[in-house]
Length: 315
Ligand code: ADE
Ligand code: ZN
Image (cartoon, rainbow, N blue to C red; front, side, top):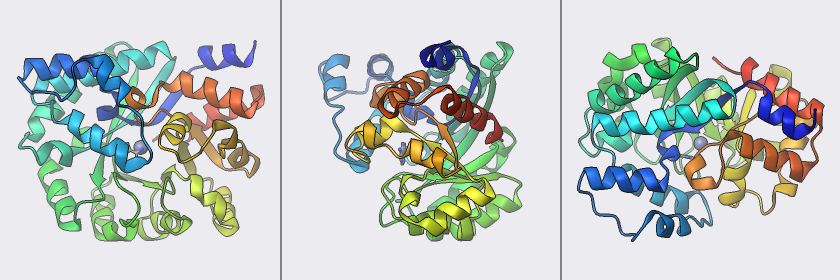
């Protein structure tokens, strides 16, 4: 089998995908029309043309604007269902997807609305044999108090959620800001993950490990700038959920040939490949594998290790 065939045919797990980041422009237009929400673009094609980002914040501004169209149970169901069907095409067997409760709560959308939609879509996907779990992320640009209020309002739904994460604008919002919220989540029996080292410095990865006590690091690219941190991640086998096309689109790397994924594997880090926000970054999971395998000239061994890691790192 060629590397391409191995990528396409091997069962995989996806551990870093924001469900709101799977909102394709065509679906956004359909949902916006259903909810009588005006969009500042003439068509799905025109919106797609606007997907040129210089950094994370550029992307987040459009991502939160898209999220505003989601209002009813059906919208959240359609969104999650479309992604879960797309995941099956890529031979994904296990998904742990992120969602951003604050992006909905802050607009007056009740937890029963977004959770109701997600839960029905997940239930149908499970009937088809896909394993699906949900992780709720705190928006790090908001306050610790807002994160605590979110944990409280989401408490009745925690039976449907396996963990908490930390996402949104990284620089200026270090993990330590959420130390007490993560302690509370741990005491509730939730798994812990955090985005760190996407744009933020290695110090944020240290904090995610030592202050928050996370079990996986989402991204972790900039960990490679710190040899002691690399040793720590390798010796403890901390998984990194790496997102190559996201890194390219958000200018974390200038070119996929400079992507650190191969170096991560060479340092013995438990790297995995993921799609992050595939509707915005030009590709789903297999597209990420193909692009990075080509750019870094990865062989069969690298691909099998990355895919094995995706299951070993899963909760
Ligand atoms: N929210 C959605 N995608 C994100 C990313 N790549 N980094 C931080 N926050 C996000
Ligand atoms: Zn992410």
